[in-house]
Figure 1 (cartoon, helix red, strand yellow):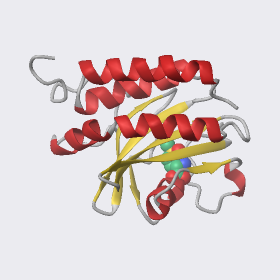
Figure 2: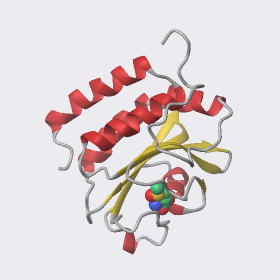
Figure 3: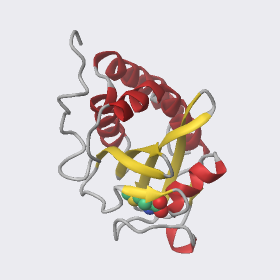
Length: 181
Ligand code: SME
């Protein structure tokens, strides 16, 4: 159990507050920042959006940028979660044939689909620095978070912005904060 049950309700309330204040990519960035800051074992947190047959990195927070800002769905643990339409937990990335390496420190990964009316439109991707960093408590917590992110991912996809390649995941996008919010 790596997400204590006492932590999930306050975290979900915080995420609701973020989503009532921000929209689109700005909301995704703030949720990534919040998850990274709140859970020690979430060493790198990103949100990818499915664009055709590619996953595009829309927002991230962590110590460093990833080179994998676009991932074809046939590649990576990220692609596997889309292909199989389910949460994928990799206990040890060194034993996963699908794994695309981003950071030397990464030892485990969890990828959780974000859906719109049942169809996968994106995913939350989190790296951990210990083998077996994620368990079912992370999966079910992150599935609840993912269900809250549908509108933000849809809106992020409708704003013609480049992938979040350069700079911190917490840089606000001028396009994503709608007037009146
Ligand atoms: N490891 C992922 C690629 C994305 S990075 O973790 C940020 C994968 O295997 O798809």
